Figure 1: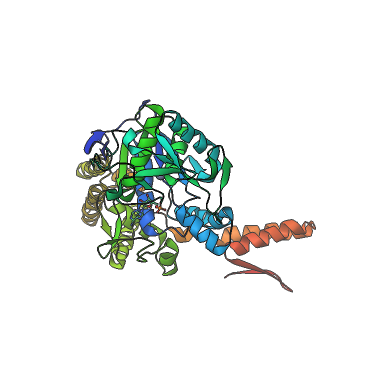
Figure 2 (figure 1 turned 60 degrees about the vertical axis):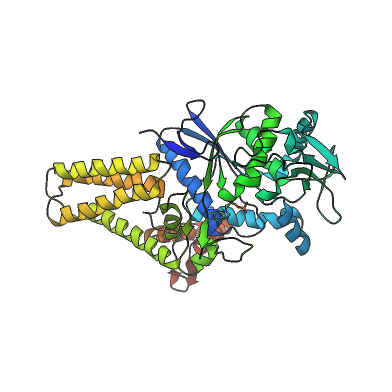
Amino acid sequence: MALRFYNTLTQRLEEFRPLDGETVRMYTCGPTVYHYVHIGNFRTFSFQDVLRRVLRMRGWKLSHVMNITDVDDKIIRNAVAEGKSLKEYTERFTQAFLEDAAKLRLERPEKLVFATEHIPDMVEAIQRLAQRRHTYESEGSTYFRIASFPEYGKLSHTNFSGNVAGARVDVDEYEKADARDFVLWKARKPGEPYWDTPLGAGRPGWHIECSVMAMKYLGETIDIHTGGVDLVFPHHENEIAQSECMTGKPFARFWLHAEHLMVEGQKMSKSLGNFFTLRDLLGQGYAPEAIRYLLVSAPYRKQLNFTFDGLKAAAAAIERLRNFQTRLKTERFGEGMDQEQEERAARALRGYHEGLDDDLNTADALGAVFEFVRETNIAMDQGRFSQGNAAGAQRVLDDFDSVFDVLRPAAAEGSLSDEEVEALVRERTEAKKARDFARADRIRAELLEKGVVVEDTRDGVRWKRK
Ligand code: AMP
Ligand code: ZN
């Protein structure tokens, strides 16, 4: 069966293939780096990771761009309050975001782009919109006139006619009831960072950033645009208006939106204060794989309620799969091949892939894998599993893990085996003998970073784990 996605634009499940039949051109609204990203944000980014992996598994190449929003209202408010430059303020959170994403095993998009590095492109885009009469100026700011784009509202499926007469909005985020002419370029305000440009001194609005960066790297019509549901309006609606008014072409063919991670019936969000960062949870001893599993195990278009019980259940599910893999690799089974078991594996693979093809229904995909594990464990207990069935069973686990990526324990990552430590300690001793002290120090620092302390004693070199 073909890969199908629910397209917010058409409100239908549609078969997906990239326009050029080869490479999926995809854009993701990345984080606004004014704080540590919370695991609600990471639900959306984890969905995008599953999407990437499934697209590749189906044979497509990827050209995926994600932006980092490093200038917006909230960033400016916080940076100004701390007396820092934008760059100083955002760099730390950008770095933290990338580190957290790596811990959650989120693949890096092919291209990561920063809004502040594209100001001239944005100015040019706004000038293009001005030439086509989609903008007007007021008090040094430039606005997009939504009445100039009759299709405005087509993504959020709202009829705004009669509601669009001239009122303006300067802030980046607002409610649907407030469909207004939105700001493309904001006039400089005292004490705020700004750029001197042909549009005047000021800074870009949030919405123009994404339109410009998406089209610059991916072309005028992209295959997939993703984000969380809260971005449908106004952000994505505005992206469509800007892009399509610039080019006269459809901006994105597929719009995929992840539902929210909830806490006791409310969206996990910074403003409500009901959020956990990845760092909070790792600090409490939860494994990053368990958090990843929790975030991706529910289908992305269903709200997911965050609970610690859920997190524990995720860890237990991973344990079950790892135990099964260990059993598969270490137990000796009878010679030959059991036909029924082969069919079981084929059925599981089919169910797994059909689940993913059905708009990334990870719950159905997991259901097929767990049923397989349960039945196969029984078959093993009853001697109905032969050595010849091992490859088929491993294939199920491999396909599972190429998307879910939780079987490898994080604890082993970055830590060194005793043999590796011994080898590095020997290398350091050699370096010292050769009077290459810089190198010896580097090795010692590397060991320390990986939790191994080296001591030079009268009896020679000793090492221990911290
Ligand atoms: P932001 O940094 O606020 O621009 O958000 C980054 C991404 O996280 C966006 O795609 C949001 O839609 C998404 N997001 C924000 N809160 C949640 C949540 N509670 N659950 C899932 N996604 C979220
Ligand atoms: Zn965006």
